[in-house]
Image (tube, helix red, strand yellow):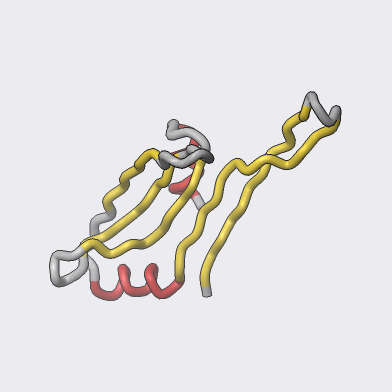
Length: 94
């Protein structure tokens, strides 16, 4: 089982003179990652964000843990338009 949340917002297009759905945020995580973190990883979560430098722009937010072999263990991912307090709150409550 996985969890995926896609959020859009309505934006008015001046050329077409109508509203369109525009990508806002995307969150996804896999149940196996969550169970693996709870079963074997150290009880600490690291958070990081990075800029996506494509023509679509945006930011990638990620939550990771450390497994028994001292390797990075991904838990959850999020895409958002800008990195802000609001986007981090959204990511952590999803």
